[in-house]
Length: 87
Picture 1 (cartoon, rainbow, N blue to C red):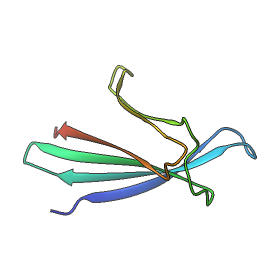
Picture 2 (cartoon, one colour):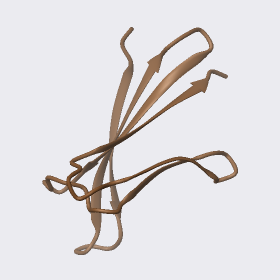
Picture 3 (cartoon, rainbow, N blue to C red):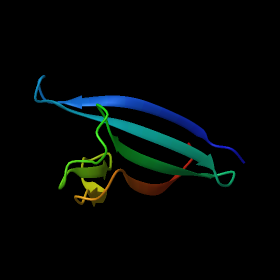
């Protein structure tokens, strides 16, 4: 089945030295009790690659890192995939 895809531009820092990214979230209904969530981080401001070393993290409700990816100098986007229970 098709998922729900949404995107949001995120700006970190203070212009003109701020970093701009696009966060893309794709929610896919997997079963009656579970959904898959694909999170992608893309460069913004017409940049081709993400800054090397940028961390992309998923936190739990107690703000502990449960999943993380770090951009290399060749990455034009990075992705994290998680599953979640409905409800």
